[in-house]
Length: 172
Image 1: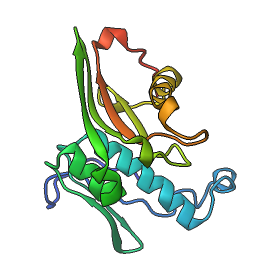
Image 2: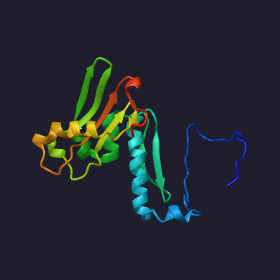
Image 3: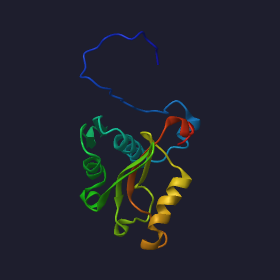
């Protein structure tokens, strides 16, 4: 709980974030936490979403002293998805690449047979930032609509690149 001046310390290059008892002294926040397993799953989902956007960064998630997730730097998008979500998911993905003027779409999209009951694997990134945009999500779902059963969600990891002045900074 004390702020100190920064000082050199011996450590390998990179950033290590160690979080323990995050809300131990803030009862109002603690009430909104779920069980340890549910909170760990939320953290793993966040780390995975960050890792998909930043292939040049090595991500390792350790929980309860055990390595839960290891996503090394330099992986291709397909390899990173395979490590994060499994071989079955990665095996059915098709490469996506399209450009129109300054707008680029790259990534991976699953076959309609891979559609899931939840939208967990609908991954959309705008200029390297994870985004949940209703319009873009609706457009992708419409493209799959004729090929998937009602209530099923497509699997994809799409990277949209567009001029920064064309993006709302509040996209999330």
